[in-house]
Amino acid sequence: MAEAESEVSRTRIMVAVNESSMKGYPHASISSEGAFQWTLEKIVHYNPNGFKILLLHVQFPPGDGFNEMNRVYTSPSDFQVMKNRNKARGLHLLEYFILRCHQFGVPCEAWIKRGDPKQVILFEARRVQPDILVLGCRGLRTFERIEFGSVSEFCRTHPECPTMVITRKDEDMPPNRVDD
Amino acid sequence: MAEAESEVSRTRIMVAVNESSMKGYPHASISSEGAFQWTLEKIVHYNPNGFKILLLHVQFPPGDGFNEMNRVYTSPSDFQVMKNRNKARGLHLLEYFILRCHQFGVPCEAWIKRGDPKQVILFEARRVQPDILVLGCRGLRTFERIEFGSVSEFCRTHPECPTMVITRKDEDMPPNRVDD
Image (cartoon, rainbow over all chains, first blue to last red; front, side):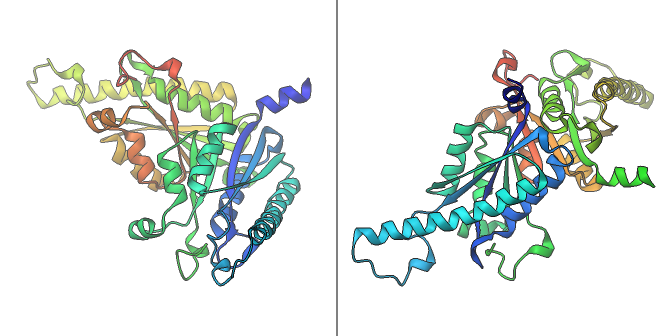
């Protein structure tokens, strides 16, 4: 009963994480690493038992990644292999963040979903009903956002719950701002 | 020195508060009351020493309020009297929130500025550099927002720092949604 009560009074923070576009799995993107770190430092702070971190990683469906561009597909099982491989890679990414949560002493949960990140993050926020949704942001300029899209911008303008967007620091900006 | 260090490590949350459009001073608006309460419950939580609340109240310049519509002005001092009266009313509003912070045990600071709330909130966020800016929101529909304006919408789309918008609960919605 005490456990159930403390679960209820914890503030549930959902953090969307994704892989680095430069280094690939299991490395986290600069923006999601920054958003996660910011959440631990600025909100969870010295009170890890007051919070629960919900880590969501959304994978594009197979075939959307550039890694698959030169591949020749011969049977349906090719897609299955790819799907399983991607899932395993995604689990390594989550393992990294879960380890960080454990080191910090904050309870966590993590899961993978497949689909368009914008839609899936909003769908999961509606389903899970976190108290806060935290998203990293590359800090693209207006024209870059229009050309390359911005998940955080979309989720900020269609909020399912209080949403906080953490923009990459200037010193963390890669040479190509679209990278992450 | 210990005091200075603990000051540095506190997460500084700026909350913009305003008066009720229905009851006037010293009553807080539904949305700013909700945003303030949400901040205490969901972020400050059981760790009041980890945070500092910065309360900003922005007043419109005299003459913008409906209360002044039927007044006849005869000398410059009329405006001065009004300005002072408004400031005193604003102080009562801040007194209410400061009392709440003290009851909760969280350190706070509060101040009043005059001008267009949208611009002043962003200017103050740029000047004070809080870790988080929390704003209440009436939850107006698109056309209502266009007609009556939305401070939180403006600040969310021109963020100076991580900004969190807390929308009024359905059960707190007044008969006229534009009221607050």
